[in-house]
Length: 281
Image (cartoon, rainbow, N blue to C red; front, side, top):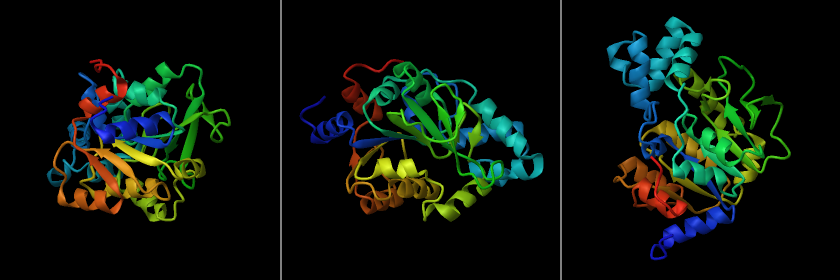
């Protein structure tokens, strides 16, 4: 740990004391030499539209492209394309493994890949953890989330013996191929998220009074800001985001609004500090 940087010291202390909620975005895949899965919404849109014909004007817009495919090729096609895109489980980076092994009760995974899931399986073989995933209303009408234990088995609720809950608000590849990806998926959730209906009660309980640490996240579109804002609601009044690139005007406004301190470091540098050793590639 770099004792000269007070932000890093505070983040490390919060992690070790279980007072922080790591919130992992797709940018964390940049720490893996060859993740083998799309690491941005634009890359995912390109992969999907290479397999299904979509009007040119929406080919780079993930949620709109997915909606078009859902409308004209059926929802099963969307799920098939998503399963193919994320079929490979990336070897988790040292940061993924450090987060999985940290003594924190709640971790948020805001992308579809299984790198963090693989890290939990490596670091927590005893199975004292589980995950809750957001569900598409087009496939699970009236049910907002599904819970799975460490072995990937569907369970009716968060396990009493889980010391860490992995919350995947937009779903994920493993173990059941649940995805929020189309316009209609997000409209359904955003209609209710302000009153917290889609957010599990256990997530709401565990976030109370805790800081959030955003890793590999950008807030340059309304969708990511909306999800982060609502998931953070009623937590502590101080948070951090590792954001080495200059924030956009809307990102700066969001950071200020949510009391998120920008950590102006490359994610790899922060990861080395938190992990205490060089990242594996």
